Length: 434
Image 1: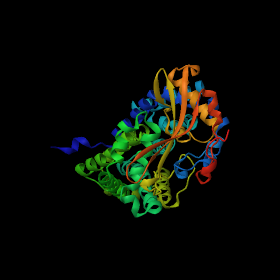
Image 2: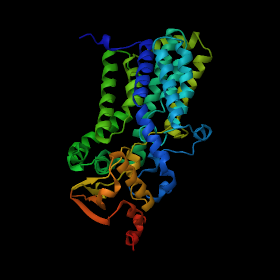
Image 3: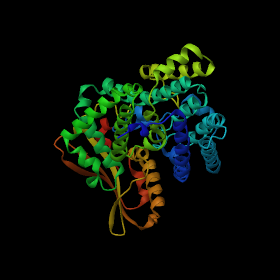
Image 4: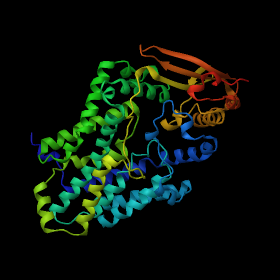
């Protein structure tokens, strides 16, 4: 089998990157409109500070709305946001068809920042799109000669390595050896199933969480892949490029299938093809000794910054570490609060379509009321036809036993505001005394 047909040159990668990003953006416009509308429909008004309920939330994983760049970008109406999204996809499509590709890719950078800023706190946006503007920039300023093109390819590989290596490095630092055993992985798989699946018992995430040996193998594979990710910069032959691509494709497919964390659409799917472009260090060496210009210095500057940021951990969107559940959490601490509604003779879990929103369900009554109202709106249910609502706490102990405890029952949706939440260290005041 001739593996050379599976490799690409820099020009082919640019075409694939621009085309896939444009198509994925256009396909996601309606989703973005719904999520932005949901966010602006009252979530800010009822939310308490994020550190009110940190029982199952890793602070490092949450989006930061206080970053300097975001504060300077304007908040647009939903129709204006959709227009900017279409413009972003259009300029990328023009680059795909070689219509002023450098100009179009450079134009895509501010359009990207403006469009994705509107939904930056959504689980589909935070940290999952921040490599796009850097890839656009590196492709736009790429030097003309083959050595310069090869340098740009290595620089884009460094972007991906920054994502994978920082994820592994933070796990090694924050979680230590216990992360390798699979205990933390089991915990997060269980939390994902309980929070975001209408039927957790039938979810692959929870079934896998009940298999400690397999979770240990998956945890080891994850750590080895992430900490060994700098090796993807080296391959100069087709089989090694293909192997690197398949390893990380498998990693991201697993993350998507088990956690619904979509690093595929706006991250690996458009950019991952760069792994199939062989690294030509001989051409790069020739270029650095003969063709130094501002494009080369700019490309080197971006590369050096991302290499150093692996250890500095600078955070200012669209620059990120990727901690990815880095802190060790023992398996015996899986605990989630869930809301159930009895409607038309059925007991239905109340679950929205964004994992960050589902995580914050137990903050307080006003949030819970907003959450229930959003769910009835999504499902097209008349709130007055709900017979009963029940807030339960589901726990999984170290012996894999699943238990449910009813914390509060409500006759009507509006009664959800009665819920009085207290931090875990104030368990005795957790229920509404009235």
